[in-house]
Length: 190
Image (cartoon, rainbow, N blue to C red):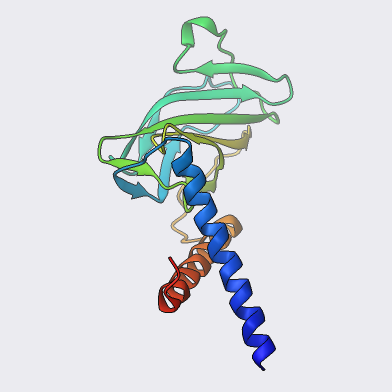
């Protein structure tokens, strides 16, 4: 029984060390993040529709961040077909049915807010987005999400309260880290 307790103590110590290492690596880079942490980003955009040109339309679910660039890329051709930031330099093309497109969104946290480096979940039209980059001490965020152009109407908000597998994993990670921090606080580990 004593061996099991020792193994558990070593395991918890290793988890705590990993947590401290990531924080100290962040501090060593000379980056400091200050402000209220944003853990969820929700964005609504116009999805690809056959024959329609991409637009800069967007709706953000919070005033904690703002969109500074929205870019659509034709995945098959590896070609940018729309960019709200560099629109004069790009030959805009309409969406084509059956093609896969990637939307890349660049967001900046407004004053008093930063994007949470560990627990951030991003949703684009209800779909989990891939976090490409978080930089500038959590002030700048770049995310990508793939959409297929279809002539069928897509119901963006069907009233369901579904949660993606990635969001469940992020939630479990948060719960586990909170538990480990709680145990560490009980044991007096800082």
